[in-house]
Image 1: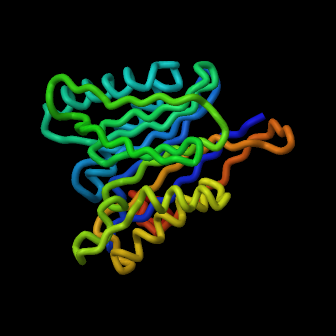
Image 2 (image 1 turned 120 degrees about the vertical axis):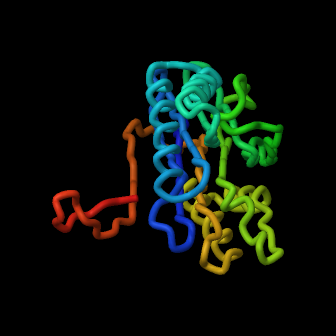
Length: 249
């Protein structure tokens, strides 16, 4: 028996309460998991609203059994007509599909995605445009065999371009390969990528930072139990009625 494991780490742009990046994890109706990552144009509340719109549509379609590539095309069509081609949003979907016995990466994002199989890493960097601009848009799609010790990762531009303002750079692919080979779980791997990126921006991220990983891992003992661990930062917020409340962003 194998297990699917997901690790996500997010960090807002320095001095910004709202992240334009949104991540959703959804169980596929035929068995498996998809991780949906969107980065809305711009920053702040407007970018967050946009990425929320995109991921909400994508998750609903995935839960209905729509193929990943068709999901991307449908969300693009809606966004293009809804916003008149004036705004863009990147979208990357990492999937493990039990029925098709495959893992896949579907991108509408200029930032590459990463795949590790048989101890070798591949950078998926084919040209891929964000959703919402241009009438016809095709996603970049890659499919691989569902096999143990397979790792998928996608990062936002805040991670990929970390350190660029000071002339530094992060070899994200090498760091991902090294961290996964040390036997870390996906959460720890994502944490290592995030913290290394944050350090290159001297602790003050220039852009929103997101790392999402999906791994197919062997299990020594059969265990059908499922688990989910989640941590979110919250800040005190004013409620519409004027009282004190709490919100997460």
